[in-house]
Length: 120
Image (cartoon, rainbow, N blue to C red; front, side, top):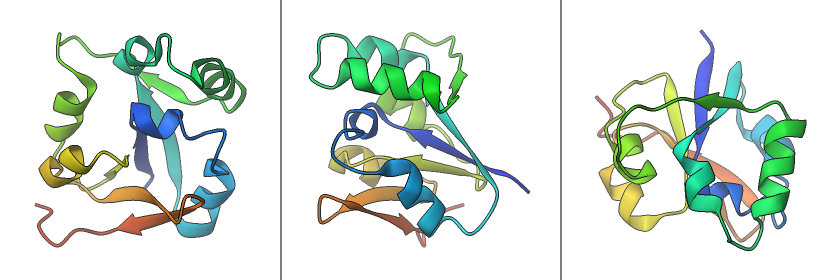
């Protein structure tokens, strides 16, 4: 069963600092696809790292999830309750709200997968 890893906007802005794709290979011993919400492009606008993030999304063929709601990215991600979905974020408030496993950046260069005890 292939898992879905959704990158939060702050994770996209880490592309220049962390080798995200090699780190994902290191920690994910299962099949997965990497995704981003379409609303993340709005959040990326005029931020340092926007150009690199967009280039890597295209180069790495990251799939874009179309959303219909007029909500913030964090609110959409917090509503996900699927055990096959992992959210990659460093946002402390969002991490508290999530009901899915999460991937975070540790020591500014390594990724860590947290399986979360309270997951449905």
